[in-house]
Image 1 (tube, rainbow, N blue to C red):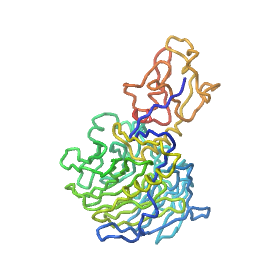
Image 2: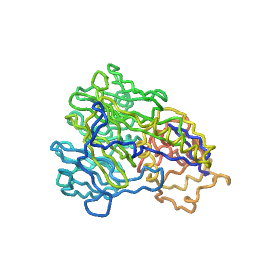
Image 3: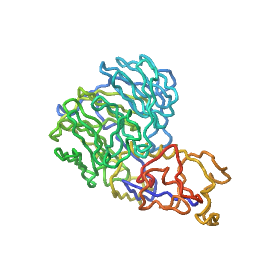
Image 4: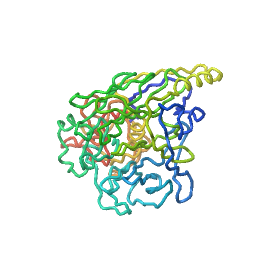
Amino acid sequence: MKAKLSLFVCLFVLVLCPIHTTFADASLSPNPSTSSSPDQAILTVVASIPVGEKISHVKTVFNREGSTGQGPESFTVSNDGTIYLLDSLQNRVLVIQNGTVNRIIYLSNTFYPQDILFAKNRLYILDSNLSIFEVTIDGQTTKIYSVPEALKGRYIHKLAEEKGEIVIWTEDYFVFPIEKHENQFVNLDFLKNSGVQDEEGRKFRGKWIDFKHGMISSIDHSVEIPIETEQVFGSATIVGFDRQSNIYVLVEEIADPAPTIITEVTLRKYNKKGQMIGVSKFPLFEMLPHKPVEITKNGDVYFLIITHQAATIYKVQLGKNYISSLPFLRQKYLRQFKENKEEKNVRILATYIGNPYSRATTRSRAYQMADFTWTWNNNFDYLPDGTYRPNDATKPSQLQNVSNGSTLKGIPYHWGGWDSLWSRSDGSPWTDFSSALTYWSKKEKKDLSLATCIHQKVFHI
């Protein structure tokens, strides 16, 4: 089966030579604990954990230039101000008090933990294998929940507490209580009426409108919050609510046109009438973690910023406005571009198709695809009439000489739209990898039962 990558894109970049992604410029960032204007946010360092080999250090891996890398993926703050930092690559939680690692909680049976939540005097930890671990604050695992099969095809944005229940927030703002049995999650009406809830019980969702605008709105449309950007709109994601039902939204903006992809991330706070009442720009970062923002019920705001040197947690006093670095950065890179003769023919074209995903979503989906496991069945090689696959339908090298029942890792791409020798996914209601990967049986078409599944629009990444 000849492999071909089908692309579902939010940003199409046409280039004649390699490009790089720039998040910020250290020379342009003010001292994080100060502000150049009384109307701008004030960021104060509350903890900075070095990257290194010591037991109190965190681990990061930056695979190549332009990669967002791996490292601490999430953090949470308890009622007394204790910080729990998820040291994902080392499968542990650093317990930080007064800026110092006080103790360490080692996690067992986790592969690559992605999110952590403090609630009900417990820690809830989402693993990349889509299990959720309930852990006491002294490190004892008391329960393990499995993400329902119906949700495994969706990017899990975060764990949250709503009305006393621990819930999963997925892409498109679907919400599911972790204690609810997965068989209760079966009907589409639930999805249509789903949304993340504020303290008053109103449900909110977000959507992409065009390359300059997004929208956050309650599902009854009583509150509508337009998200506007000066340059190219990247994404807008609800990251939390406080007790006053203020809404916190993470916004990505992209400089355009520019000879490199330059992004800027801001956190924006809106009151329940939809008015923006606070904003802060993110400082320099080299990796965007799964959860870069923590919003407490009291309205305290924290940022997790990852660099090659440290994982730094800031407490943030939001300002009334911010000064974007994108125009200056764009001019800077345009000058560098003009001075570099080897890159004179580079052309950048930004075009948006559909509803773009945030960088964190795209990155997580890529890991889901890379880690996806499935079972080979020899019937994959046969057509419905029982004949062996045509000679020109060659299998990828990694599938050559694979025995029946073997467990394989990674997504076996086919020609665009085809998911087997005889079935197509274009225009079909596939909802996950497991229903898209099919083989022929003499009696009936069977869907393989696989470990991980993902929504159709992600299948075409």
